[in-house]
Amino acid sequence: MKILVLGGTGAMGVDLVKILGERGEDVTVTSRSERKSEFNNVKYVKGDAHDTAFLQSLLAEKYDAIVDFMVYNTEEFKSRRDLLLNATNQYIFLSSSRVYADSETPITEDSPRLLDVTTDREYLKTDEYALTKARQENLLRESGKTNWTIIRPYITYSSQRLQIGVYEKELWLYRALHDKTIVFPKAIAEKYTTMTLGADVAMGISKLIGNEKAMGEAFHITTDKVIKWDDVLAIYKRVFKDVTGKEIKIKYVDDPKPIYEAMGNKYQVIYDRLFDRRFDNTKFLQAAGEYEFELPEIGLEKCLKQFLEKPVFRDTPLKVFTYMDKIMSERTSLSHFSRINRKIKYAIGRYTPYFKMKLMGGM
Image 1 (cartoon, helix red, strand yellow):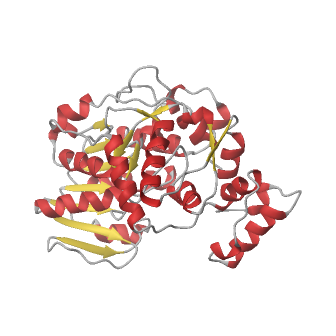
Image 2: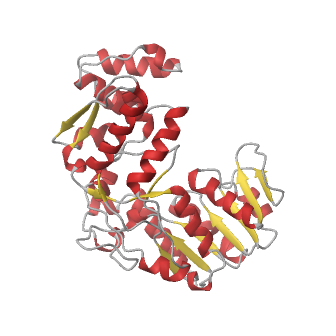
């Protein structure tokens, strides 16, 4: 098969490209930087897939399948929907299981979406991620075509992406390695979540490529095993101590509001992390065949151990990092910050008595 992967250099994309390469498919992958392939049948094309001219040059050819990992705003996606659908036999759109509303029973693909049932008018005025993805799903359904497949991953993890609540490893694990306290909301800690190994999601996508049962359908590719966030943290604590000999320090707080105000992700907390998230993956298994997902208790341990062998971090989110230092009366040497503007913002945030979080600007 001739397959185009747009933005295929993230965690799931890398695993998918490897699976397709090993399978012998003819794969083209877009990347914003130069990359070399380990497979003769996989080529990387340097360019920004958000750029319409670059995309049109790629779509001068027709593909058996296009797998789209790009993140669009709604208007951007609307402008390219038909271009993408007309260039392939199957367009695979990466949505998100954050589109679902709260549910007391395991979520199926037909469970209500937030866009359809929320009465929060202020939220509906936004193009927040869960609403954006649902609106783009609607655009596919309204296209008059059925050569599309919607994939709704939930929280995925790998050795390069390890989450706890709304924190990425750049916050919680960086702080842990530097003997700093992690401030964590009790209301999230007690919730059940579903965490799926990124490689399992990639394998699931590969099983739906060219699959007639997938045409015009939506699937969440998730394990059906649930785990409390507090139990995820317990796994991290145990592995961290085994590898480093140090303890992860946690300060539980009752109110999550200061956290999401510092992080700027209010709706992700309110309309996702404060929900119990359980999934029924029967529809996927019926279409793709039996598949055994990695248990989170096993996968999270493996991935954290792999990362700790050679830890590499991107920039830590500065607002919430500073907030945690301030309320825990902890200090960070300015040498930890790579750029002068981040040093200044941290110093102002940490040491100015009447500091307002909004003065710190972005990350």
